[in-house]
Image (cartoon, rainbow, N blue to C red; front, side, top):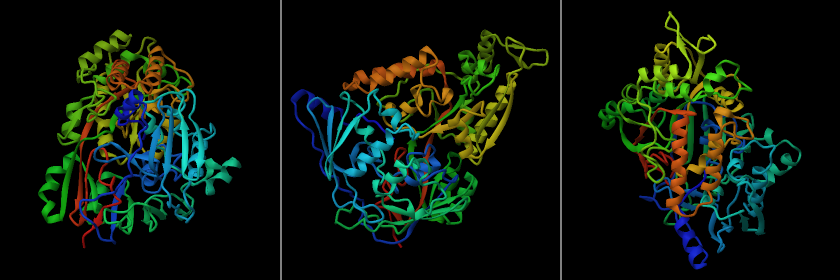
Length: 565
């Protein structure tokens, strides 16, 4: 979502030599020049909860609108992860690295034909910094002082940061929204009511390559090609090539596979357990299997440690580090790898994603599967076992709680079942609760009505992109959500690390700071990590220009995908 180190070498030159750094215009290139027509069809697990990018907190919403409908000033390349221009065609920064000037593309139009200008950028920042709008972008843009921003002219904006920041490029990667549509509702206090899923889809106006034209709940979302999109291919032909992009709402992963087998969809995210069988059938099925390596996403268990929402005695268990460490030792990662992912996954111990070689600390504390060690830690924490083999706390309360995850995601549901079985072996009573994904996210982000949840995050390149998770006031600080201040000394230190980390310009020194954060999280285990799957996708052979990667997936370059009929 945010943050990066890719500008640091340039920044070092600026600080050393006093030179500005003007980005070169971006050129969209493709492996082959495409032909117009056809459609990309995929399946997704759940319905979106909103079409408003500043209210969206779950991938069921963001996967629909971000990149397809709404675009940032700067984005990351789906193959190299390097920053590249989007709605900003170029930029430069001051000698001290605090003042950034962005030169916007001219001749970019919103879907309704109104021209995109600097006013839209300024308005978007007004929205981000409005405390009445609960968006995730603001969490990482307070520093603690916010960015000062102003319009220079119709196509130029200037941002003044409170200090030179290693994260500046990612900080400005927020989706731009149209002032001419949303300003009046904002002034009237109605912004949080705008662009819900009951909005006529053609009223969701962005600058992106597609415009939504249909949404049928629990059935499908249809987008059509934006004929006035600003990108062109290497020969100057307007992009995108494809006419329609369709997202079918399948409900579960088995249904997604069936839709691909029946040719209702033409791109499918392959589970590790399916790779060999699908590879054997690839020629007959007319598709190719692509491997992207370990994903940037994470899979974990989180316990609700907020006493405002969790009653005693459960909250005391969940707040106990030894209890969480004991549960960490009950995560049978190898069984997950073998059973759930068909051997195509790797253990995860750190909050940094497995493929992120720049920041990953290899020697953090680990929790190998060991139920005897779990018992030892529980005993050390004051838990005991009764004659019936059940686990009791220091006040004689039986350890009993509910473990939830999103229904339809068979990998998470299987993980939930396996973990519940091992925790039962330790004497706990664990009620498993598969539930609707949007309801699950709503409970998670409100802090109410949940004990423990299995879920994941999309991950990213720079750790600071997760500041809304790790800083105590962050909107996704899920184990202690809704807090303005850290509740423990270690959370206070993590807050400090993220405040410091974004200001360190020396790459080696910056990595060291985030190494300390990884050690703290590995010790305190607020999130109990499981495994990182290797990712695969199947795509029909008629789809050309696919560059599948773990970071970008199948559709990061959807602008240049085309159908060879």
